[in-house]
Amino acid sequence: MRLKRGLILGVFSAKGGVGKTTTVANLGAALAQKLKNRVIIVETNMTASNLGLHLGILDSPVVIQDVVFGKIKISDAIMPNDYGFHIIPGSVAFTSELGSIDLRGILDELTKKYDIIILDSAPGFGLEVFAAMKTCDELLVVCQPRVPAIAGTLQTFRAADRLKIPVFGVVLNRVTGKRFEIPTSDIKRTLGWSTMTVVPEDDMVEEGVTRGIPVVLHAPKSPAAIEYRKLAQAVLAHLRARKRIAPRRKRKATERGRRKKTVKRT
Ligand SMILES: Nc1ncnc2c1ncn2[C@@H]1O[C@H](COP(=O)(O)OP(=O)(O)O)[C@@H](O)[C@H]1O
Ligand SMILES: [Mg+2]
Figure 1 (cartoon, rainbow, N blue to C red):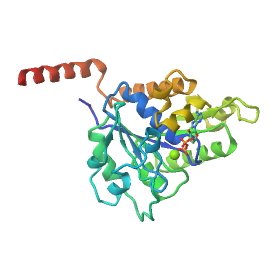
Figure 2 (figure 1 turned 90 degrees about the vertical axis):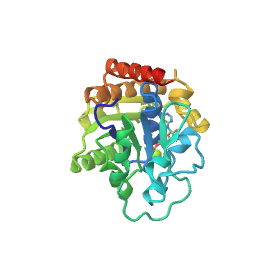
Figure 3 (figure 1 turned 180 degrees about the vertical axis):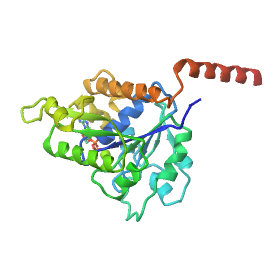
Figure 4 (figure 1 turned 30 degrees about the vertical axis):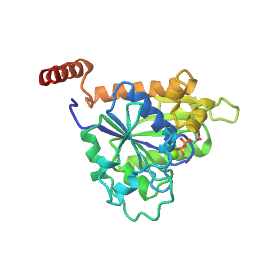
């Protein structure tokens, strides 16, 4: 049993192609190994959805756009998978103009059922980005060691600041160590941010995307998978510290209680 509502963690960056969707899929998969069926990842990139593709979902019968357009309830858009977490994918078909979007009421439903709700987002600062950002308790910002991505990260920090949403951490992704890359120490200084997950460039990530399996499951020993698992551990520790999930001892006791009740009934 959870003590409080689940945490809505948004994964953002103004720059596209830096690894937001990859981070969401892998963080969801890695957290599910500890928080079975209590993790959900949600597409909020309404116009160019591709989160489902990272899990091999090519054409989902239920999509977030149907929820936003009021055609179905959010509970009917949830898809479980074999990896112990849930997903609300988006439509890979072209979606017409959305008009205004209000995700707050919609996503709030999920906080009753899940310990953590991880949002994938669109790049830039369009309507859909702000609609998603406004629902978040905290943000995870994805960056690459390249000048445009760092500029995008600073823009995302400013947007978060304006909405008064705390940034939980920064993921520095696709680090190759090549000469033209901005050194990690310089990035930390520029961003004023010391705790960062550094994920290396790793072919296994792309191989996993092609197979529709997040790299933490596809190639658990690969360098990128190891770093994504460390990120998941940091998020888990944060959830425990914020009492978003019950301490392990208490949860086990609750689970034992539940099992006893089941035995009695049968
Ligand atoms: N650490 C990594 N190593 C190699 N390829 C990566 C890594 N992270 C992401 N990619 C690849 O980069 C591309 C863009 O990543 P994606 O997660 O879609 O970015 P975004 O969601 O920010 O647009 C994808 O093809 C993905 O497989
Ligand atoms: Mg993406």
